[in-house]
Image (cartoon, rainbow, N blue to C red; front, side, top):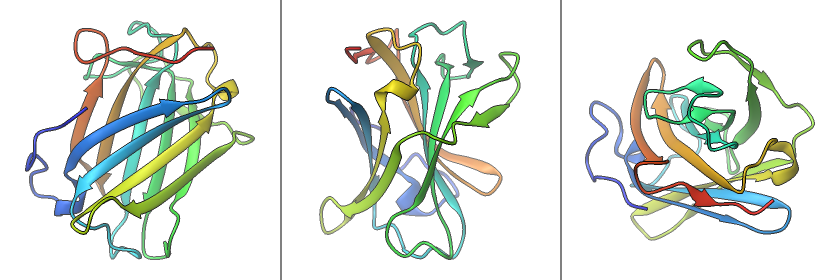
Length: 171
């Protein structure tokens, strides 16, 4: 799935999403966020690379996000002044009332994140989570990918019902 180039206003170029991808196997779901430029490691500021996951493919449950995804989970990695290679990453379950930004960490979740050079000029952040932590899992999911800096969202891309999704994720 592609995103418009140059739509991350007032943010560094490495926050501009170019391409998003996803994949799965029997045990894991992965998301790739390819950005315009090279991600500095370590970074002089903190940046978050996240995926809001609508695991039940029902936009009326979870966090009712402005991108029309009912986010049941948030898979989020961040880079900062201490990040030398792999970013820190966590999985959160939505615990709010639908409109609030309230998440609880899934502390035992199997997650990983990596940054690697897709090309000489573009880097990719890869986020992976164990499928067993995304319950209920409906067989199809929608998701919103975002990159944000302190106090603002730099860029988003959506794969959800009514757009380029949902996408299949067999249970």
